[in-house]
Image 1 (spheres, rainbow, N blue to C red):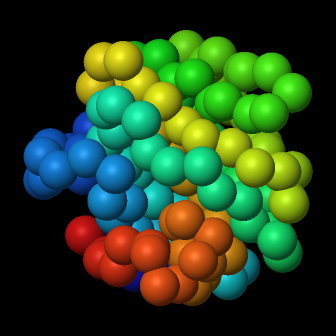
Image 2: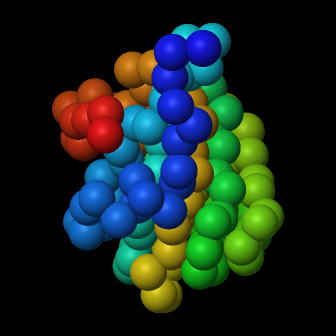
Length: 118
């Protein structure tokens, strides 16, 4: 085995900006990412893939048109593909995200942030 274990707390300590996912590993064509979030993101959907959120610290509200889901540390939720949603964190919250490599975080390549590996 050539790679070392990934320490998520260490990776989260390498950056301070919000809503900019950082790739920490890959798995079967998927990006495994950490991100710091605070405030409201934007309403969006992913037409071809589900959207996976796991809270590492803090609280995340995933707003959806038919009701919100609130997550705390150690909880995860998968937004089904095609469902419009808007993540919101009233305090800085740290997340683990998993999605197919190359999927734009806004569902639209023209408005998505570029994801970098750290």
